[in-house]
Length: 192
Image (cartoon, rainbow, N blue to C red; front, side, top):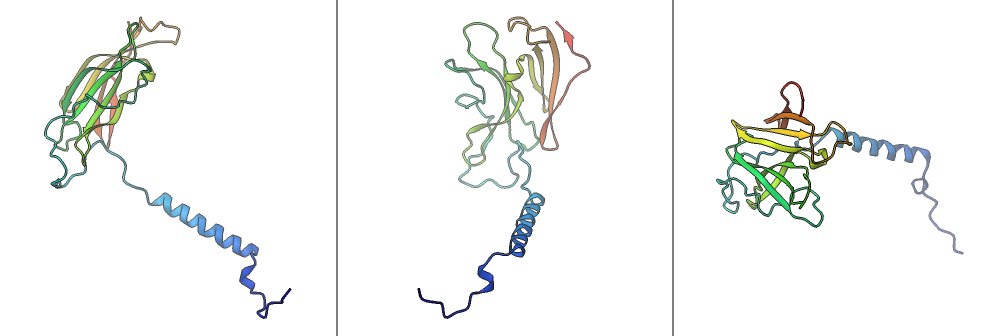
């Protein structure tokens, strides 16, 4: 074996100080990334001029063909009710849709979703879930007035209550505030 004519270099062997320097650099990157965050997501489209390639959105988003985040298995999604209006004050209409699975029997739970048109394609997309079907609620008295969504929610006091017979009635209103839909509930739930 031939010996190297160059002496061994000190920086080719790791020492504890090298690991300490690496750990300090990684910690600095993690700390910096936690400080520099992207802007929060909103239902509003970015303000500013529309490009020629982006379609002008003057009609409310149509819920037909939207892939709602609801698991219906072999049956289809059914849009029961819908209402449109400018919920976030950006001048562009949103659509709120009440959706459930088109089950042949029983009372499937409803979901309430807010749709807006994608800025680049104009196609409708879900931007918020106001009522999740997993909460086992049925939506009645649904309306959109003065930038607020209101509904009466029928539900269950315990998991032992059959799905056919909700025994709790709540009112709810959602308004766009500080970049999110905020729910307010009138005082007191009622037993049906």
